Structures are given as structure tokens and as C-alpha cells.
Amino acid sequence: MTTAKDLFIIAMDPGLKRSVGQGDLSLALAGAELIDLIGAGAVTVDRDRIVPGGPPAPDDRLLGEAAAALTRQEPYERIEDWLWRRGQDLSAAYQAALEEDGELTRKRSGRSPFGSERVEPVDTPARRRAAARWEEREPVLAALASVVGIEGGRSDDESGLDDEAVTTVVAIVHDAVMELEAVRQRRSIENSAFANLWRGP
Image 1 (cartoon, rainbow, N blue to C red):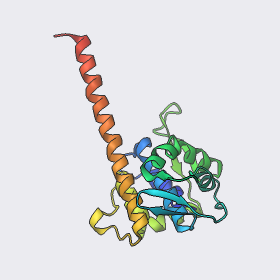
Image 2: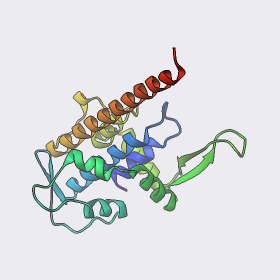
Image 3: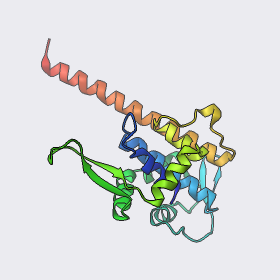
């Protein structure tokens, strides 16, 4: 399992007090992929740019797709641009892949067969590994979880991240999630103003 898959499984935990937004999660998943590629030696970070390396593609299909999507021409891609490009609908891609692998199941809330459907992790070795990383507050997983608002992550001052490149990625993921929230709030205000305009005095 990859950090991105572990993060997705943690985010799908039905015990969370609030659900994680798909856009926020997609950005964090793109960051998690990049961190795993850094760990595998497939990329390095030069300031805020992603410099591809030469190792073979990772065994994981989605991580392999991420590696294949890297920009390999100078001046190389900025981390922020990568997050927005790779993160497009990425949570849906992870959900589909994990359902296909039998890691997720669909359940209906309440007793009615017509109740709203939700996705939950299945009790598999992969889920138990993700849960173990979470219980240990593994620094990368905890930092990314904190960025998307999952309680129990670590604050910035106790992140425990000891790799400068990883710290840079997490910080840029945080900024991107904040930017997305600002866009949401702006749209909400604009929609409210538009509704009031039509409603009249």
C-alpha cells in the first residue's frame, strides 16, 4: 500500500466526526503520491520544482500513473501546479481502484434500502496496516491527515517530518487546500448575493 491509499482509507473511516471534502482529499492524495515518489528516489525537489529521476515505475498502478505523468522537461513543474493537475478527480480514481481491489465496500445508511449510500473500508490487511500507521501517528500520514481536517493529526509545530523535501510538499499541500477553501467561500458569497438580487428588497 502507498501513503495515498492509506490516507484515503483513513479518510473513509465512518468514525470520523466530519467527512473530508473530495477536492481537499484529491490535493492531499497528489501530495502523498509525490512524497512516495520522493521516498522511492523517483523524483527530487529543487526548491518548489519536481525533478524526475531514473528508477523504474513503482509497482502500484496509481503511483505508476503519477510517475508517468511527471513533466520531464526543464524548467520542470512546480509542486503547486502538480497538485492541481494530478489532483483533478484523484479521490474518485482512488475510490474506484480500492473498490476494485476489494478494499472498500458500499453501504446504505439507516435501515431503508433507499437510504443514502456511503463507502467504507473493508477489514483487510491493507486497512489494518493503514490503521497501524495512523495509530502510531506516522509523521507523513498524520501531517497530510491534519491538512485535510482529520482530527488526531499533528500540528505544524510537532509534525515530526525530518525530510526537507517532504516538509516542502506538505506545506504546499496545506496552501493549496487553503486556496481551495477560499474559492469555495468566495463562490458561496457570490451565490448568496446573486440569490438576494433575484429575491429583491
